[in-house]
Length: 439
Image (tube, rainbow, N blue to C red; front, side, top):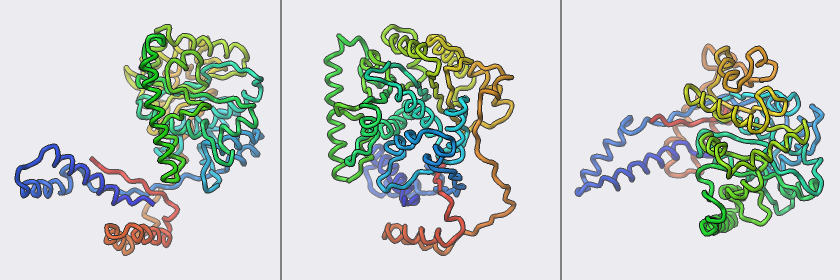
């Protein structure tokens, strides 16, 4: 298990080294005196706070969801080959809100806004319905298929988009030695078809016109191939396949579209971007085919659904939120859709949005819905109500924790064993821990 005190001390020591190297003293005693002042509580940070939070209730496995709701087991098989795959073959169970989100979005065709807390698996709440629709539609693909942007995931920050890429690589672009990865599943059950994805932001290579940027494109490809080679070597050295998902896969059958030109010519099924880049894309001709091909795909069949995923929805407030709301209306109009169209589905998440009239007003105005129709078409999925606790119902193992604090610097293994034993002996063992460091 991770040692929160050790992590805090490592970060704290890194700050001290940074200060000493950036602002060195000629005399060592001056540095020692400054370090002593820095180490006083509250100088550059507060001590770590370890917060015990209730564990989210696990309702069912994905296989049980499929059985309960009459959904094809192909969804369970594909997700467990990629997104939910783990080496220990432990069955991942859906939290209550994940179960509800998948049911409401995929089966009941409602727009959803998930407002559960940080670390509650909100990403799976929109990834699972998106994957479910891809699995369903791909059953009808023949030797050829229509390329279109079936899902757009909108993030306010590029850093959040990068984290999403790790999830998508694992979910859609995995090979396993025992032929149980997501690509292996598609080879066996979808005649080798692929679910393509790509990140289209300012950091995506290469800007400009393709004919004039071939040299730069080759340079970027070499760098990415070097990163991929390093990831393969690190995976072998550490026996950790997860390291492969931190860089774009450069194998011949990779489904990640890492450059702009590939996505301009053939739209990815899932595109990750931000509102600034979307605004630029809608104004120029370089990306016109992405929207026109998607519009044609929507016109092919009324069952085709365009998913618009909005993460960190609470950040789009005020003037900036109004601008993004109008930008989304332009996007839908470009695709031949309206906010009330049955062929568009909004999937949003926010950790700080409460279900009240103010939130309903905000959501209906942001997405362009009439307020009297909002409750019919939208489902707000929040944390389950918690029972009020007048006084603590658990007690802290102070003796064991004191022992843990006294030995963690000498022997991490013994310290972790001591802490684990302390937790096992007390009623809060089933609670998960969250560490926050106040700046």
